[in-house]
Length: 116
Image (cartoon, rainbow, N blue to C red):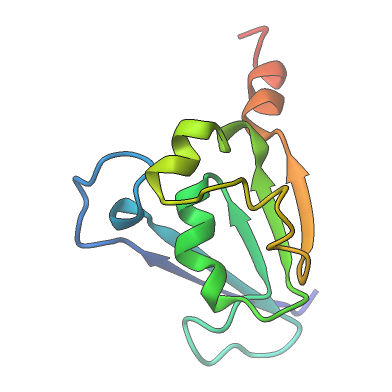
């Protein structure tokens, strides 16, 4: 189709940080376009947040109006407290400037693989 693709992993120095905490958040950029991509990373316009830590660590990189896909299964009270959220950002209006897509990704994955 003539599209170009570039990937860029981002692994934190704190690779042994406790799961679900901000220092241990890693990310992966996927940049695709209908023209040549000349840089490995760019300002993202879609964020897939697998947990509250990933949302909090990366939300600052998104412009207002960007798309945010969140794994709602991981937005538990304990996970939210680990990263300092007093209330769920999915419900408190703090993400109103974005296009939010809440999806139970873990539940959907388990259901898809239940026969295995």
